[in-house]
Each structure stands twice: as C-alpha cells, then as structure tokens.
Length: 136
Image 1 (cartoon, rainbow, N blue to C red):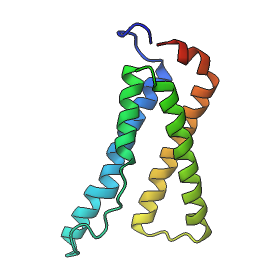
Image 2 (tube, rainbow, N blue to C red; image 1 turned 60 degrees about the horizontal axis):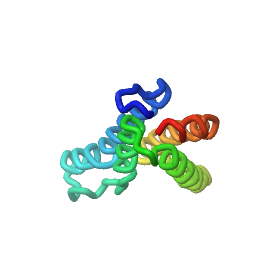
Image 3 (cartoon, rainbow, N blue to C red; image 1 turned 45 degrees about the horizontal axis):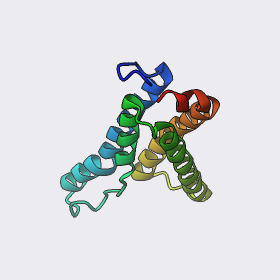
C-alpha cells in the first residue's frame, strides 16, 4: 500500500479483524475462562490455563495487515505456513485418540478457526504475491 492512507483490500481487512478476534478468543478460552473456573471450583489458580502466546503474533500480524510495513507479505506467509504445520501436527496427535472434555473441545474449535484463517491467508498471499510485494 504505497499510499499510507490507502484502505487494505477487503479480504486483507477481514483477515486482520479475524486475527484480532482469534487473539481475544484465545485469551478467553486459554487464560480467563480457566482462571474463573479454577476460582469457582476451588482449584489451584492457573491449574487449567493452557499456556499459549501465539495471540501476540496474531495481533502483530493483524497490525501489519492494517498498516502494511514492507515485511507484511513475507510475515503473513511465514506465520501461515508455521501455524498450519503446527496445527496439522496437533490435530494428528489429538484425533488419533481424542478426548472430548470441555478444555480440549474449546481448544479444538479454536484451532479449526485458526487454521481456516491461515489457509485463507496463505492462498490469498500465494495467488497475489507479486501485486502484494509491489504495494510498498
């Protein structure tokens, strides 16, 4: 986006907002909800927290998609590839012996949305790579 006032493409804007929502959702299901659960049921505080800091990278990528620094296309592709690989491996292990309790079901549903976001992002950036690299 050569013009700093230019609006990102609609799909890029959608992906940026989806990443923000996914980051918030991750914070709720992996940190806030487990802490409330632990407090409500007398468990040790933090016993059910699922430590995960990908939400920080998701927020950084969302910011990059909205502000479009020079590295944005490379960042989008790199994060997409890494996320897809990690989630596919986690799905492989989980689905080989699934345990559908509250915590793992929340995790699984979240990961379905995360992988969908990054598959869409990877396809979009792969198909539009030359145009997107020239925008800066």
